[in-house]
Image 1 (cartoon, rainbow, N blue to C red):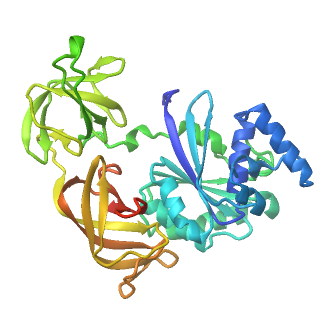
Image 2 (image 1 turned 180 degrees about the horizontal axis):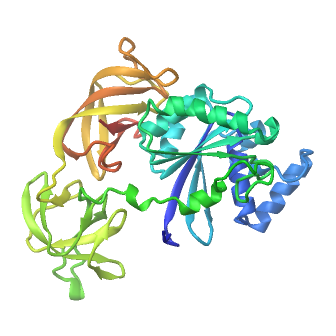
Image 3 (image 1 turned 90 degrees about the vertical axis):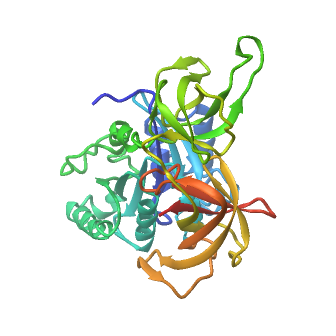
Length: 418
């Protein structure tokens, strides 16, 4: 299988407090030589000042002052690194219960999730919580890293027991691809290099799996969805009569000559050209940003969607949504919010809270209807104008929404359309 050298893989890390997420990322950056010398010097000096032997790898990701002082991750920390085979963006998400909303934010665009499990403690409540969120967000690939294997004498039996326990909980969720890797982030076993201490493990080290993970088929290439962000009218020189509809392809494939429908108006036309900054192209697919021109002059604006004639999204004002509440203030009953769906911004109200999820037991609570911070619940939302939507499991872009408080302009919730 050929890997595109420019292909970008986004992955998130999740796990309980002190499972070693930041240390694992530090090890990946350190062993793949993705750290600047001045960064390394500063962290070596900090490690020495604190009396650590060697480099404290966790300091590579803990960017906030409070994080360094407390030795924990609070906010989502994004890190970028490149190997000869692939580019990576890491979202290091917090392990604490009160930062569940941060994990939802960090994992929403991920191709893969690394779930860390402490080999001494095994599968715990936080493991179940993070696995549930990864399942809810339809992250295609789950890499279960059983960390701190050095503290259980690199025991194969302990590793197999944890795999068995995780299989039991993952069988209740919509998780497609799960892989298990025994590691020691502190010592570097099976992170970038194969471990000499676990010759019973026949799989690849973590970095090799990340470099070769097949993610091209994760993109929906069937349902053509192009939310329009803006209309380009240069009106100068050779582009005097140019009218292009610019945006990012959410899914599907677009080519000149295809018949299309513009929603919500329902007008039809044919694609005349697909243009980029470097010139015209013969094919556009997710997640490319392009400008589409049509054979006919149609009134199209921001929030409209260009789709194929024989494959339409659902156009509706009533949404059934799994919602994660982000805000410190509870949701107000039937209060008005601004809803953003792709490039479409409308007004909306939460009509009904159907149930709240207990993400430790996976039980549905139909009695408690108040939405507080970090709650995940199923709600019914009504919008002032129709939105062009797909189910989140079919299309993560056209199946997701955010709610914004009209008074403060804060994002108060994110949701997945059921």
